[in-house]
Image 1 (tube, one colour):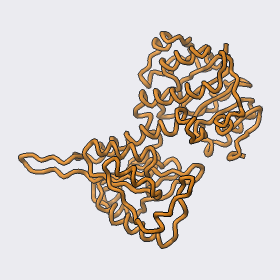
Image 2: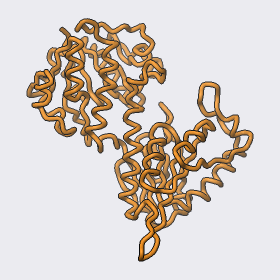
Image 3: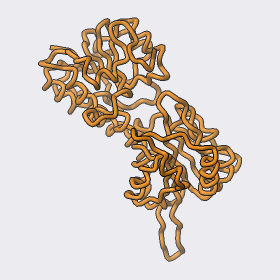
Image 4: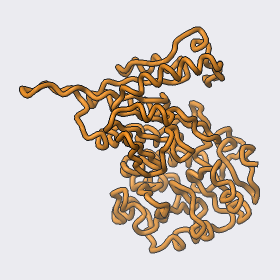
Length: 375
C-alpha cells in the first residue's frame, strides 16, 4: 500500500492545503494510506479531527509525515528544510513555479526526488479536471474584484435614493483568460459598468456573453490576430499605437482596473503605463494579478499597496486564492485526486510516464531535470 503525505504549507501568506478531508476519503478508496501533518488544514478551516474521521493518520511533524511517503502532495513547492525531508524515490506533486525555481527543481532531482509541476499540466480536454492553474485563477479573478471594491471605498452599483443617485463604478478588466472572465462576471454581479479587453478576437464573444462591453481597435488586422492554435499574433507597430491611444482614453475614465495578463516563462507584459496611471482620478484602484512576474501595471509592487501622487492605489497580489483558502483548497485537492488516478493502480504508485499528461508535467525523474523548458 503506497503512502501519500500531506504537510502544512510554510510559504509566507499561504493558507491553502493540498488535500482536504473529502479528498482523503477518495485517496483512501484508491488503496492509499494517507498521512497528514498536524495542523496542515487549520488555515483552510479543516481541523485534524476531520482528517482522522476521513481515514487519515495525523502525525506531529512534517518529518513524521514524509518519512515513509511514496507520494508527497503540496500546494507550493517545499522550502529547503522540507525538501531535505523527502527521501530518494518519493514523487512530489505541487505547484513548483518551475520557471522561477529552476535551481530548487535541480536540487530535488539531485536528491533523487521525482517531481511533477502542476503548472505544466497540459491544456487538453482529458486534463481539464487536473488543471490547477485554471481552478486557482478562477478564484483569483473573483477575489480581485472584492479587493478592488474594498480599496475603492465607494459603492459599485448605481443606487437611486431620496438623497440623490450614486453612480455605478466603472470597472475595466485587461486580459480575458480564466481570471479575467471570473472578474467580469463578479463585477457585473456587483453592479459595476464593466468593460474588458484582450488581444485575442475570439474573447469578444465571451466578454459580451457576460454582459460586459469589449474594447479594442477592431480593424482588419485585429480580426486576423489569432493563430489556428488560439494564440495571439504579434501586432504591427501601427496597430499597437492605435490600441494604446484607445486604452489611454478609456483608463483615464475608470474607477477600478484589474489586469490579469501572464505569459508562461516570460515577464508579464506592461498594460498600464505610468502616464496612464497618472491620468486616473484620485481614489481609483488598479489591481495587478501579474505582479509576481514583473507586473502589468507600472509601479506595482508584490503584496503592497502603492498610493501615487495623484491618489491612485496600485495593489499587487501574488496569492489571491489563499484569501479564499477553503474553496481554493477544495478545488486544488480535486485537481490532485484526478491526477492521482493516473499515478495509482491497486494501491501502488505506478505512474505511466508515457501518458501525455504525465509526460508534459514531469520536471524531475531518476535523478535528472527532464522537462525541455528547464534544461
